[in-house]
Length: 316
Image (cartoon, rainbow, N blue to C red):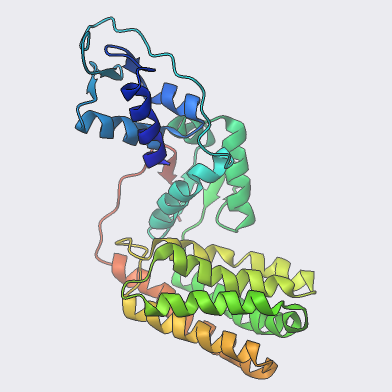
């Protein structure tokens, strides 16, 4: 998103649609391109590094060239160009999720919906959609006063979630097998094989592999009550999107072990070894919580981080 916003602005400057001396602002770019302010800010700063624009007294950026630097430079007229059709809440979800996951390892966090909207320069409708998604994932809840709260993740909480997964996921896999399309299983296995061949695992690829087995394959289970219960455990997948984050990551050798366990489960599933696949999944989940809990060891000697404006410590 940052790269596409930058390239679009650069093209507009180079072909004269935005002229020398005209002014660009973060909020203006974000609105015209249908993106949040973060990628708009990144695009403008990149153009500044390349000397295509210059900072203008805290009032945005002025396009370099003849007439640049004029104090009363007029605001550029940006044609609306929606550079993607993804819902706005999806565009900011990962950033908010990462900020939350980092901080709830230290303590409970309160989310200010108004500040969240201001921070990303989006409407309250967008923030409500985002918060509703997080609520559905079990990541946040409302306190007695009606405020959004993300409770502290403790080792006991993680152990409880993994115990629930060990009880339900093997049974869901057994029930899914008669309904699983073979191509789905083969594609999932291929992705694991590709990841094992890479010297350095990719966060997005690992996240996809986790979803293949624990969400997509299990979604074929006809018992919707089991699936509904398992939805409350899906928040544990969040940190797999940030494998190399200093707080949320896990050692590479642990990732390699998890991939090999996934391969074993999928191989047994493809052989129609129902009992063997269910047992392999149970064994995988028995050690998976230890991988998750390593995050608590990583942050044990870490000082508190600063909070973005939309988050604040809640205590507890």
